[in-house]
Image (tube, rainbow, N blue to C red):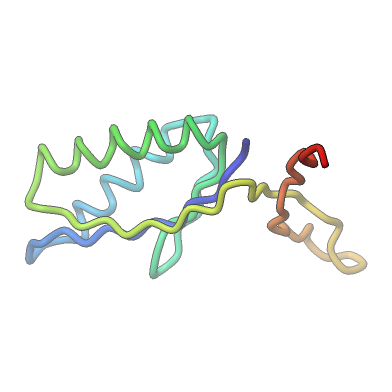
Length: 106
């Protein structure tokens, strides 16, 4: 199952930017993840089990190598990404979509 995760990292340190950037840079090293970062958080798309494994490892790595971090996550199981054609002559538009889960037998 694919998933989307929205994650924010708050290192309890004065010089927090390098710690956050290092975490984001490490996430971008995984070719099986789609990673987008904005001013408030980072969004990650991939297979649920793989995303959660990577996040667990990278959060532990951050905790072991720096000051106490706080992570805030929103996990959207079943949310995939797809690309639609944009307006005439425009860029493609990425649209979040919900994967359909199999119907339970009645």
